[in-house]
Amino acid sequence: MIIDAHAHIFSQIHGMTGTGPTRDLGYGRVAQGSEKIQLLPQFFEKTIFTPEALIANMDWAGVDKAILLQGPFYGECNTYVLEALNHYPDRFVGAAFCDPWALNGQRDLLEVLDSGKFKAVKMECSEAAGLCGLHPEADIISPEISWMWKELLKRDLVVVFDLGAVGSRSYQTSSVAALAKMVPDLKIVIAHLAQLRPQVESNPEQMKLWTAQIDLGHLPNVWFDSAALPAYLPQEDFPFPTAERYLHMAVDRIGPSKILWGTDVPGLLTSASYLQLAKMAKLHVGFLSPDEQAMILWKNASLLFDIPSKM
Image (cartoon, one colour):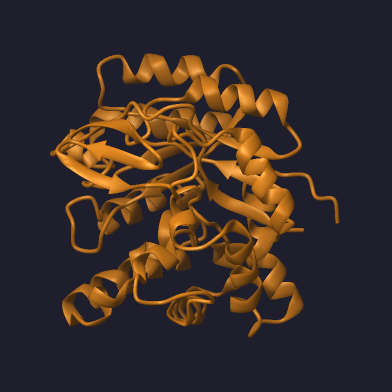
């Protein structure tokens, strides 16, 4: 079994970031404010990624299930994800989008969660594409959003954080540590293995920041996903040996029981095919015992998100 703990679907690009709105320019290109980026490969006229497209890739690569995450960059798509959960309950687990600092943010989130279909809430906090770009003073442990942690705890939901680049204002290691200790039964996942990349490795001060964040995995209620590592390595090709080394570094510090495999597709499809990403995952955990490999590839996600196992 294998579970992708970090994937996205969207029917259109209609989001908002700190640098401006996002919109589809066609053939995988997206405008983010005045900037233009190649988000997806140049396959189709419309820049979309449907649940059916994700399932086709999962079947091709032998991936059983995926956790669907959202963020402000794509635009709010709770309804779209909910439809996917209803149509494909055996393939997807959903995380609801939430902006707790928005006007009516609490009301909107509670309405979504009342569907009973979501097992997590995603908080895309990064400055570049997330909530800290929209709300420059946002802090995870600000009293104004304390209602959220009580609500997630009551519903036994996971919170998934993207804390952005190392050293950025969204990289709120101390706030997450405080939250994890303040609400010890709240299950927390931090995306992208705390965003280690070559620029961080070459900067001793940033490496200290990364070490401090990855060490949050020593807390009993904090985990990390490994999504997007190949995107940080534009000079490398499959099988991305530096990404494997980063996984080794994380395992050495916090152990295999605290890491979930994830891809961050479809954005990662400009770095590698989904089949390559799945092959890379199995290659990169090869230094571990079979049980430890299973922890990263599916067991940790299965336990954390309460996903029935077929094994």
